[in-house]
Image (cartoon, rainbow, N blue to C red; front, top):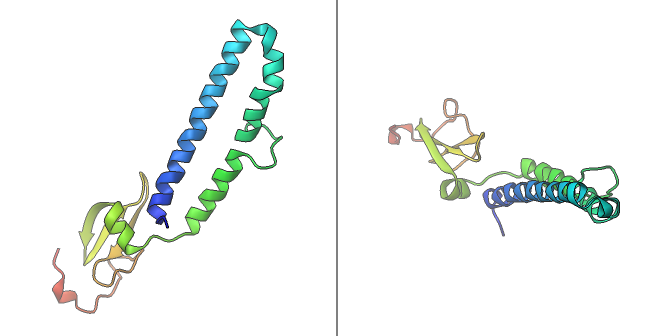
Length: 136
């Protein structure tokens, strides 16, 4: 079973794939519109339109790729990181008062207690049983 960190990496790749598909379909649309006008009406009504619907670029799809991405994002926002996956996969940033801060993505970070392995702590308010053991 994948960890939240691994799922987040997969989710970020899914967004990249979505953007790549959008760019490629847009490029194909321009090529056909500009160089093969005789085929443009048929292509835009059928395969270009279907791909755009599947991506969520118009209001025709019942479940588009965009809908799936939003659903997965909501799921990931509710899922919690574990201490072991943060230590293994995330980038260590700093330590303070027996706690360490790890980057979970480009803009987010999370504090964990290195002693009790509690996740999402405030290093200035988190109580440690044996604080004398910790030195920064």
